Image (cartoon, rainbow, N blue to C red; front, side, top):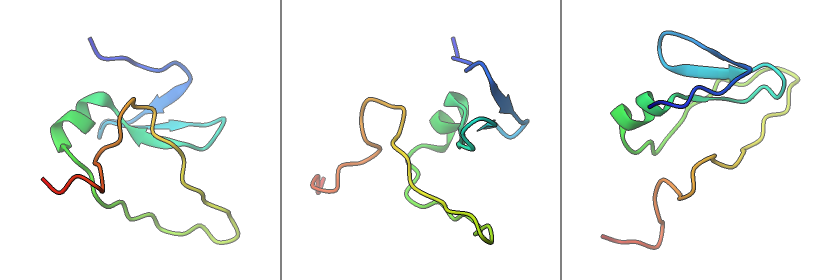
Length: 68
């Protein structure tokens, strides 16, 4: 069963938005369908600070030291 986080706004393209923190993300279904995501392009917002946040998952999407 897919986990639906309370307090998040979901759209038809399987993205979610947390209005309290401004975090955005993908539903578990979208992440499974897309596979590994190696690049994300975000348009800058004039006058706003943007920072990287940690994943909610237990493991990283890829290991930079794993050459296999």
